[in-house]
Each structure stands twice: as structure tokens, then as C-alpha cells.
Image 1 (spheres, protein in one colour):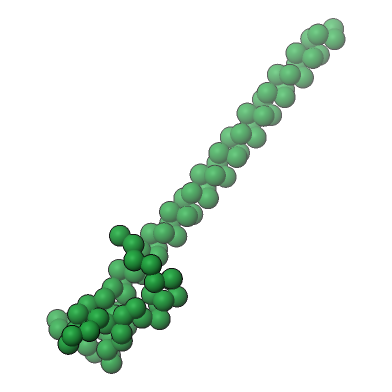
Image 2 (cartoon, protein in one colour; image 1 turned 90 degrees about the vertical axis):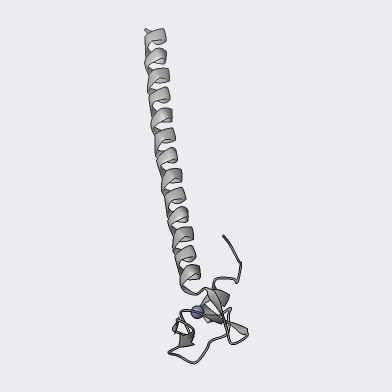
Length: 92
Ligand SMILES: [Zn+2]
């Protein structure tokens, strides 16, 4: 009887351990998804605030509202405040 009870306990312990492992893997997966989503969002912002050569200097496309060689806003030097806020790290 004691052996049976110990077997059940060991089995239950294994089941709980496996369930905990699955929860842990799901949590890690969720963190990875969140991190990848954040990296993608940062990359979209970097693309939006990319530099362009304008009259001999680098300006921000988005902040300067640059298009076809002219700006709708006063030319904003690149890296702009947005890129500086992201840490000004060039990534590809
Ligand atoms: Zn900008």
C-alpha cells in the first residue's frame, strides 16, 4: 500500500512539474513575442525618422516632412529628438 501511494505521489509530482514547465515555456514565449514586437516597432520608428541628404547635411525625413528634395517643415538635423530618444543606435 505504501508503495502504491508513493507511486501515485511521484506520478502526481511529475505531472505538476510538467505542467509548471509548460507554464514557464508559455511565459518565456510571451516575453519573446513582446520583445520581438517592441524591436519591430522601434525599427519602424527608425525607418520613419531616417536621414536624408538635404543641401549638404543630414536631416530627418519625418521631422522635416521631406519629400522630393524639399521640406514642408524647417529642416531638422538628423539624428532628430526621436532618434536620440531611442538611443541613436544605427541598426539594420
Ligand atoms: Zn525625426
